[in-house]
Length: 147
Image (cartoon, rainbow, N blue to C red; front, side):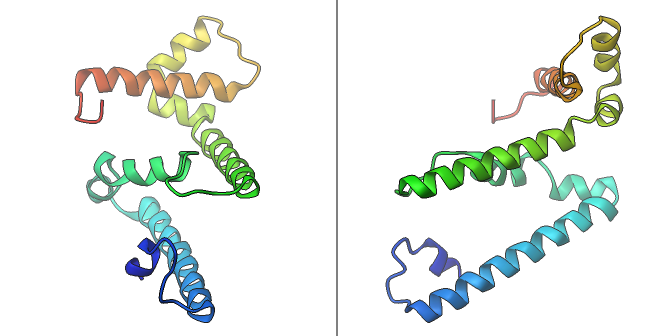
């Protein structure tokens, strides 16, 4: 089905075949995401590090969360895309930016931010700042080719 997905105009595929392929793609993708979530929950860190890393996830994350697309889309689809991506961004940031998660990932920076009296209207912002600053400091210590 990779050939079908990369065929922009779907030349050579009748509507019935397109519907079958589109349903299969959706079902396979949803099941794959569920399987990946299970792996992220159950596998030991050593195996997770081999699967969930910068090399394997950067392109996926970029393509999911980037508003720009290489194909032409109409105004309705543009608005639908914007709405979907914004909602996903909010959900992901809200999930990552819990105070508990930030305290586990970046305890030193969380202590500085909270002891320094940094008061954000949304606690998620403080947590995300701590995580981002900790990741930034690690990036400076071990730069990769993606900087």
